[in-house]
Image (cartoon, rainbow, N blue to C red; front, top):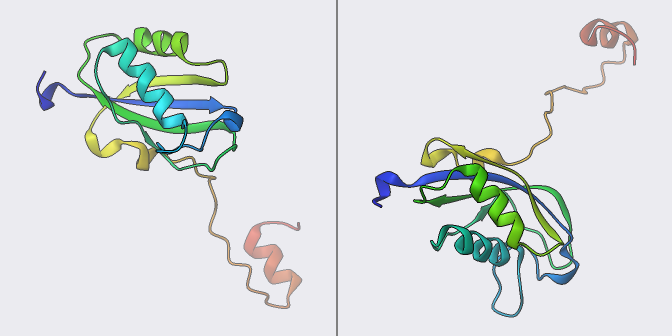
Length: 138
């Protein structure tokens, strides 16, 4: 398949990092990234590079690590999802997997972020001004 046939996949991963050297592939030990790449290769028969939305240190766990990979497989996403989970060790699970459009919409765009409102906490000295600005008392 040509690059034009490459598909983008997003996945949400949960893992117990006790047995791993962290997220990123390491020369001196097993990583979450390496295990995921090897599992995907077993199912799709294609070498892939899994890109995480962030990295973790050795021994760190994750509940919702977002990651992506590109692959030219013709397998349906549900078959990849079930297949990958069937070959992963018990301490790593892909909780969600979906196909997404466009190369630019990869892991950087999917970083888990807290939705924060931009609030100025500049002290004005006036309880009335704070109450009016935020629509009520805290």
